[in-house]
Every structure is written in C-alpha cells, then in structure tokens.
Length: 130
Image (cartoon, rainbow, N blue to C red; front, top):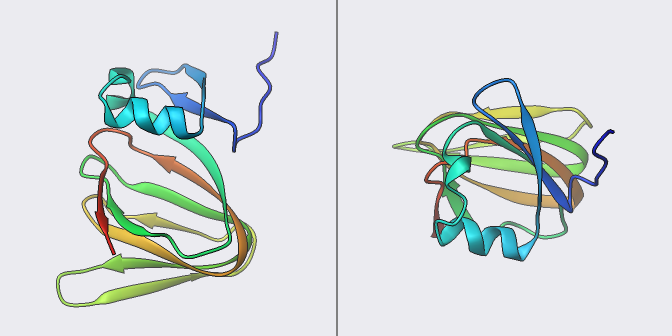
C-alpha cells in the first residue's frame, strides 16, 4: 500500500541505502531533532516543504552535505555567505533551484508568499541568529 502525505506535514527520510520512510513534521520534529532523538537522520537526506510569507529569522549551515532548495511558487532570494561577500541567488520561476554548498551559511529573503521544497543533509545542521 502506498504512503500518502503532504510535504508540509510529513517529511521523507531518504535513507543512505535505497529506501525511504515518512515521519511527522512540525514543531515536535524539530524539538526531537535538536534533542538528538532522531539519530537515523545522521545518514541520508531529509525531504521537506515549507511555506513562507516573511524572511527567515536565522542563518543555517549544513556541515556534511549540499542542500537542494527549490522554489515551487512565489519569489525568494537565497543569501549565501562567503568569506568576503553575500551572494543573492534569485529564485523567481517555479522549479528554479539552488544547490547550497556544504558548509555555507544561508538564509532567505521572501519577496512574495512562497512555497519551497528542500532536500537536506540532516546531520548536525547549525543555526545562528541573523
């Protein structure tokens, strides 16, 4: 039987092998992740979707892999922090995406209500205030 869900409500863990599993999203997921209660996410990738109507409130960085960030609707600039500059990657057309390099701090400026899809290495994701 097929597993059916909504990407904003359930996340998909692409395991390091060739399997995948669903898990509930939302606030409880992030609490469990930061508390170290989801060690399986140290391997593979997490597929998730979010809607944004305002700029992100923090920077994030993935030390163990690239992150795929795809615009499904709206208008967003993904800001990538380099050692001497901030690069603004404009995502305007549905389906446009950026591969955020491993170890690069990034955030987003939202220009219109937006829906985005992420494929993220979950291991040791870091956050810091803007």
